[in-house]
Amino acid sequence: MSAGPGTAHEPLAHVDQWDDFVAGRYREGRDTKEFRNYDREANPSIAEFYRQNHAHQTLAFVLDKEREYGSLRRRRRSIWDAAEYLNTLVDESDPDTDLSQIEHLLQTSEAIRADGHPRWFVLTGFIHDLGKVLCLYGEPQWAVVGDTFPVGCAWSDQVIFHDYFAANPDARVPEYQTLYGIYEPNCGLEQVHMSWGHDEYIYRVVKNHLPEPAHYMLRYHSFYAAHRHGAYRHLMSAHDEEMFAWVRKFNPYDLYSKGSAKPKLKELRPYYEDLIAEFFPEPIDW
Image (tube, rainbow, N blue to C red; front, side, top):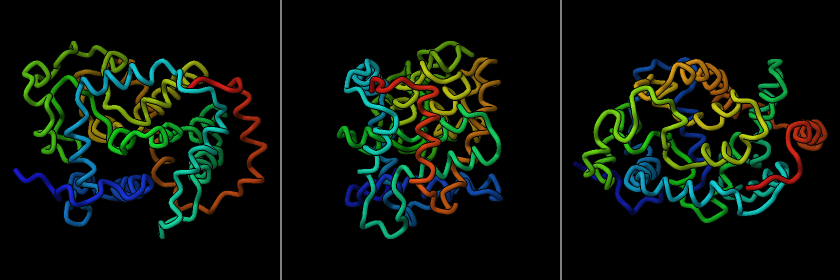
């Protein structure tokens, strides 16, 4: 089996490249059959990103990151400070966008706000990508972005570039290669270890401050194999099935707001500072 484009390619030139790829892959109006048609030659950096992601996202790696970041002892920071910190990810050499990270977040949250959703939903849109500060902590991009999936059990063929899992050491652990692996049937996703990334991190940071539907939106918005393709239902509880309606409700705002008009940060900041203060003390643990 080919290893893909090879290590000569950078996995991603910039974290925003991932957002562009996903938005294009799931754009409205596409036939679902197109979703699994990935051209490795057309997207060599994305293919290389997934080659690394699928080779390194082992159960042991995930458990290590859960211990490292789950204690939330890195520092104390306000939500707005975290958004401004994330702005340092902007690549001025990127010809495709002149938006800051905060402006990207505001595009999502303003689209949610315009549709009249509750204030906690608007805030969820604003914070959903703040976990990407992991890049600024020194984590490689394959441990920050990308489609997420359970570890410790057999990988679904609905996970993008499924064949790259052949290089993952867990492929040689028989216990991890059964349908349920280390889990029980319909045990619920709360019991399942997901591949590590910004989704899981931001969920852990804010879970004590937002309602449960927001937990699911944040924790599983990159779990495309489940909420787009119906995979892993054998691990999901009836409650997970119910709550995934919120994930699917959130997803279009995440994908389709990027082309919207550039938000006016100075005008919007007072509204979002008030919104953040409604739900969060200042600062919080990260």
